[in-house]
Length: 400
Image (tube, rainbow, N blue to C red):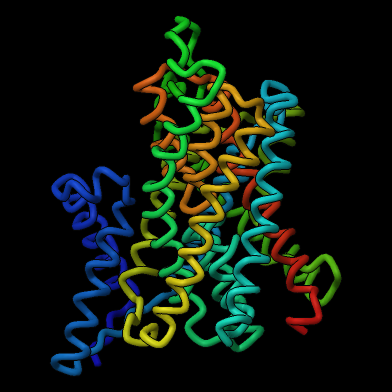
């Protein structure tokens, strides 16, 4: 057993990110399916540690004291970047898509729990292979996995969550393109839409006018620290009540209130780019730590059942995108692009959704509606609604 302290673990995480970056730019598979750098590097390291464990009996123990603060910092940045005034731009389309997303969350958990019961597994396994990791991604999966281990005694919940989220990430990239291409051919505009020369949305061409300075970074770090501090206080106050929520959701809520409250009174405007940069750093380091410390040998007994559940979830996602998302969003070209994005974050993550949509719009033409709605729902509303849906399922007698 080799133990790495906090700083050594941080160094290892940064090296994992650099390794992942090299892999993504060098291996066509990783590049084609937009596998995130921390996922590529972290899984390779986890596999290497599995080989060391099985062949030589060596095991490395990482100090994970920075992992949870990094995860909370990431969710704080999501909240800080949520501009409620921009919701008017989405209008009815945003509300309709949010309803569609909620329907998928309910379906994914129902499938996951049903499959877990059928396979003789803990129903919590069904939730982990449901909306927690598929619609929530690695960050949400790790947060709930930690909660399941501490409160419900589900051993290896975080490892299961990381594995499910990683499989979902790949599958979301695999099915998004084919589903969208099928829908475009059957839409009201099978040849797509011409470039209408409209001004690109903020999500397609983000504003990069302001310069990130040391003062801006200090201000942003202060905002994140406030979110973490107050979020933990709120989570502790809600503990044991019917409104109890995971700490990361409380941190996200505080971020929303803080950023929009400051903007409302005109006291301070959150610098979105600085928040995004720090959020990406936090998420990348967190994922690298979570994935490189995976004890894959402990997942062997769950491998086949987990793959069975994820296989059914993938088929269900494709059918849902075709028969629900596409139809409810208007059965037109924008609806087809939205369906591609839904496949991306319904099984993987918002970056996968954006990659899916870009692959379609580069071939058939722009979809400003999709690039406005999907990032807003996938990066902000999804985490809040998903937390409420999961909380609803955990109230079932099955989990008491």
